Length: 429
Image (tube, rainbow, N blue to C red; front, top):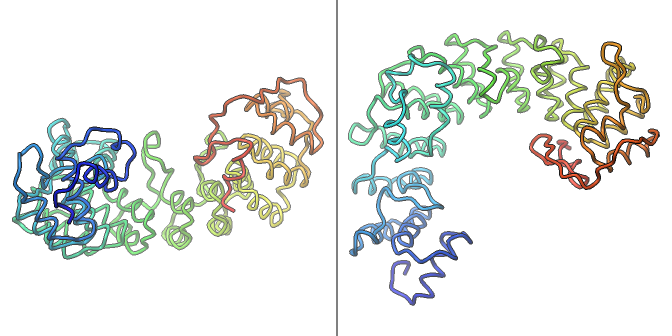
């Protein structure tokens, strides 16, 4: 029924429904795109008879769907079939000319100096990160992510697999690490006749990916192979501060405990000027209370946790820390925490800190130099009248600072654009 002739109106309506996009609705009807979308939809639902009909249908070459074609809405057919676990369709596509190399992979090989496994150790960690995280989806990784072991074995057969020089195998290993498939990791290493120690820095990337996937067995395996438990990336390009910091930020309490037991450092980190680098700060900023408590029990600084909770608008965690650590209510600690609450525009956090004794009208000091009062700081920093109004409601003195109530904000806290309507969306609870 999907491929039967119909009126132009029905064809166009079907085209738009499959694409699920308002963009194509205003474009000219393209027969090839129509058929490629039909092929993609049939693959997704596992309808092999329609897959055969669409691919083998006669007609002008310019109008045919192909085994390597894509649309603005769907991956290549082989990747789609592998991701959905349709092994019969995967086999059919392979039999009809589908290849594991994606167009993005071929483009990379043509234009980059790190294009095969033999080049890996000639480059640094920054380049390794680019290679591992700058590729489009692939059939092999899609099958691994979906747990479709039969398809993985099919794609690794000699007659189908990529050349054993391909960097795609390392990406596949990272994918297997994230989903906890040590057997697949070992299978891929065997396929390329290599081992973990043959690739500099790869163990760190595997460990971080396993932490993202909450895979304790893989983390143990990597550590047993000699990877540094305190490994940190080159910080100006990779969005984590270290292994324990990543686990704590994600609330992976089981992994935090594992890493601590394996010697991870819960205490040391950058000074306050390098804010955010401590594991307890990463956990507190994201509201991971169990991870915060575990790190505090291993000597982490509760004041740094308090500051991070304010910076992340985690008001309930601020209240919890103040309740359980009375030493945090001293003047300097509260003033510093109030600074972070203002920076994140968390009205609830400001209220909690004022109730705990934070001064509303004293100027900040930095090495003896008197700076702004909290309300002036808030207005100069953000220009939000609603922040100033809240501080006045708490007892702050009115200020002569200009109130730019119509100012457009680009302030983001944990990816939330902060406005009068959205400021309380940031906290975890």
